[in-house]
View 1: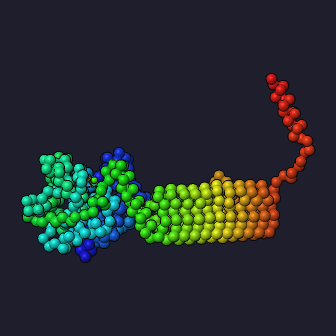
View 2 (view 1 turned 90 degrees about the vertical axis):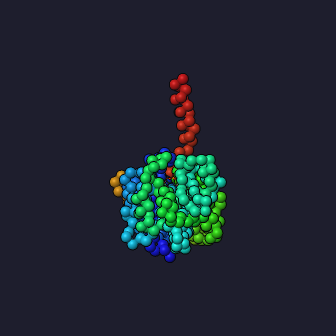
View 3 (view 1 turned 45 degrees about the vertical axis):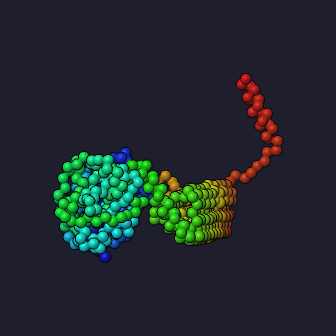
Length: 471
Ligand code: UD1
Ligand code: CA
C-alpha cells in the first residue's frame, strides 16, 4: 500500500497555553505516556515509511522524549516561531525525505487516534485518482471550536473555516468539522503550504487553507468520514482528564477481553502486560513495564511500577513495588514495599511492613513482618524474624548481608553488613550480628537475663517519694 512511500508529519510545536503549565502540552502524560507518544505510535503502526515530528515550544524536552521512546524511527523538525499550523507543516516538510511520494499531516495533541484512523485518510489518495487532498471529517452535535467544512452547491469541499473566522450563523450551524488529518502528494503539499498567508482572525498561517488552495486550482478534496470518538484534541487539563478516562476504558477493555479480571477503579497504563486469569482489584495502579502472570492475584490498592509478577503469585492489599520481580506463587503484602532490584523467589513470602531493596529471597524464604532488608541475599527456606534489620550502609558505602539456605534469623536482630550467616545457622532473638556465623552455628549476643525479686515495688516506693518531696 501507499504507506510505504508516505511520510507522517506530526505537529507538536505549539505552546499549549491553555494547559497553564511549564511542561510543553504534548509531554503531559496520559495513561503513563506523554501525549505525543500516541499519535507517533499510530503513524508507526500504520506503516508510514517515515515519521517527522515538528517541535518548537519546549523542544529539548520533547526531542529527548521522542529519542528515548522511538530512537531513530522519528525525525525531528524545528519550527522556530509558532506562527500557526501551516507554518509548522512547512517546517516539517523540510525534513521530509526525497523519497516521500505523499504526506499525512496531523496534530500531536490527539492521543486516541489509532493506526487505522490515519491509514484510511492516506488510502483515499489511492482509491480516488482525482483526489488531491484526503481530509478526515466528522459530524458533531456541538461543533463549537472546530474548523468547519464548507461545501459548494454541488457538494464539493471548498474550504475549512476556523471558528473565529466564521461569518454567519448558517456557517456556525455547520456540523461537519475538521478533526485535522490531511493526506496529499508531497509536491502538492509543498506548493499549497508556500501559498499560505496569515490573512485571518488569528493572524496565523493555517494548515487548513491547503483545502481552499486545492479548490481554487480545481482539484478535488475528498472527505474521509471518521470516528468522532477518537478525534478529540487536548487543549486544557479538563480535556486531558476526559481523554485519559477514555484511554483507560480502552486499555482495561482490551485486557478484560483477553481474559483478565479487572475490577472497576484499577488504573492500567499503556505498555503493561497482563496474562489471562490474573485478577486486578480496585484501586491498583500498574505502571511502566509491569507484567502480571497468569492467575496472579493483585489485591486492592497495589501500586506497581516496572514489576514482573510470575504466575499464581498473590499480592495482598497495598503492596508498593518498583523495578522488582515476584516469583511463582510467592506472597507479598499487605503493606510491603519492594524497592528497586528486589527479587522475591518462588513460594517466598514478604509480609506486612517489610521493606526490601536490592535483595533476593530464595525459594520458600520468609520475611513475614516488620523488617528492612537492603542489599541482601537470602537463601532458600530461610526465615527472617520480625523486626530484623540489615544494616547495609555505613554512611559511605552499601554492604551485602548473606543468609544461606535454611538459616533462621530471630526477631529484632540486626545484621551489620558485610556479614554472612551460614547454612542452617540460628541467630538468637535480639542479636546484633557483626561477625560471620558459621553454618549450623548459633549466634547470640545479648546480656543474660537477671530477675530481681521484689524490686518493682521498692522502685515504685522510691519514685513516689521523690515526686511527693517536690510538692
Ligand atoms: C486545529 C485546526 C482546526 C481543527 C482542530 C482540530 C488549524 C488552523 N485549525 O485547530 O481546523 O478543527 O485543529 O483539533 O489548523 N502547532 C504547531 N505550531 C504552531 C501552532 C500549532 O506545531 O505554530 C501544533 C500544536 O502543537 C498542536 C496542533 O498543531 O498539536 C494543533 O494546534 P492547535 O492550536 O491546538 O489548533 P486548533 O485551534 O485546535
Ligand atoms: Ca487543538
